[in-house]
Image (cartoon, rainbow, N blue to C red):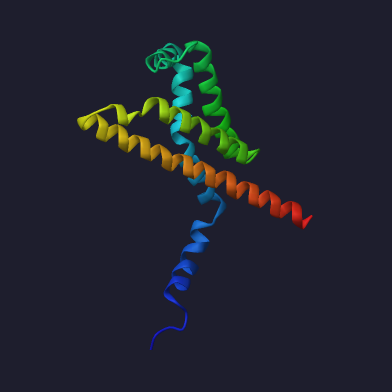
Length: 150
């Protein structure tokens, strides 16, 4: 005899306690921020390389823009991971990623394998942007729900 509880309800009942735990949420946020933490720390450790990267993309003045990039990558990641103005950090990294993707992944100007690989990177970055928008959306909804309940 089949169970009266639908499969989706049984499956989500099993997954919910695991996936909705606070540690899993924090790990997910850490994974989302990982490239920005790595990038920010690497740029800070090799500032000359960070300045050269800005120059490679035609950005000037390169040194101040490298400093801003480091601050955004590390600062916004810290906001997200700490939960302090998480929505703001998520929107900052979404905007930063959008601009950086348009500057660095111009696949429409390329051909062959380079176009293929750069297009993949472009659309992967759109996925990151979507993830950060969801983080901001959830954080603002949670804050609104807490304010309404007060």
